[in-house]
Length: 264
Image 1 (cartoon, rainbow, N blue to C red):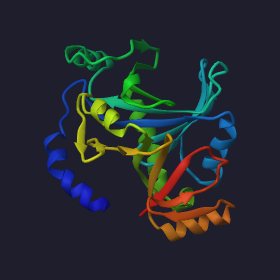
Image 2: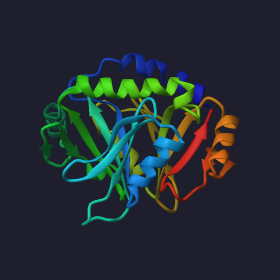
Image 3: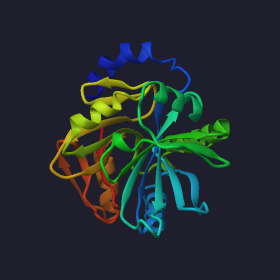
């Protein structure tokens, strides 16, 4: 099914491989905010062997650490004191600047939050495009060369067996289960640079995003691995339980605060 999807998207990807300034080119990272974020970051780094993109640290207004899933980063974040509940976030990367992205949105009459600038990045929030408790935003890193080098160095460690006991290849897709999938698909289709195939939103690189109908909200990561059998054995050795279902090999531990499925 994975290869059928890629083949169906090939003409679209070839046509859109050169993005216009300001258009979205990929999911740069996805985050989850957890009250026990330092401990979860340690499990994913030390037991799962996911390479560190940036060490867990205090950024002034929040704490977080970043781990590589090959083609995207998983950020494990401590929620702020005023918002202690668990939240998720999806950061989109533009081909141009945040200012160019805002100009495109304004020209199309698309609502968005104000551009927020820090010394290292600029963000633009996009609240109406995702259900709660998900934060969607454009993230424009000012020093893109350095950020890209850090991502590539961490991703390269996934090619080394001693650093990749679960056999991770890449994050294939982010699945958002919601009562209103058609509503959010309609909103996403308005974003500049979006490419859609059925209920998948795809990019010139990185994971796809998919909306699915469900009675209750959930967000899951579908991670491609070299061997499901090897991944299952390694997880069981580490003391984590799994179960096979139609979406893949599901990690059933609630300890991580994440809904993860492994696929080949």
